[in-house]
Length: 141
Image 1 (spheres, rainbow, N blue to C red):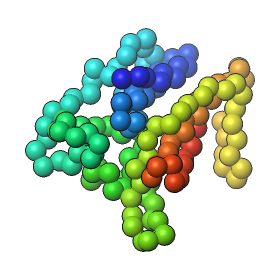
Image 2 (image 1 turned 90 degrees about the horizontal axis):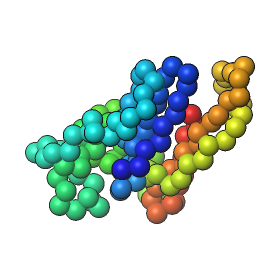
Image 3 (image 1 turned 120 degrees about the vertical axis):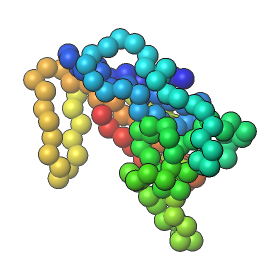
């Protein structure tokens, strides 16, 4: 599993990129230098749903893995962070990791409050793709 690690002077935020493209929350807390993907537990959860493209891998349940951005309609029955209804009235969003980039400077979202750093700021930008790239989402950290 590939990881994306964001460091501040005192904290670490780590995201795992599952081979199927799901972004999994690995760690947020005191600054560390380790790969925290060992914390994920993959085992058969009985009646929990599994992504179709996981095939016979019954341990790949999105209902139990800590997703970075859980979406409605993917087999995760917890509260979704995102939902989408297409032109045919079908709900669901299967967002998968597409790319990421690190940029210098602080991003701004018009109309929303911002935090400013007195030192050189870095931003992490994640690109998600869903429905054979019929829609996209951007995550900024």
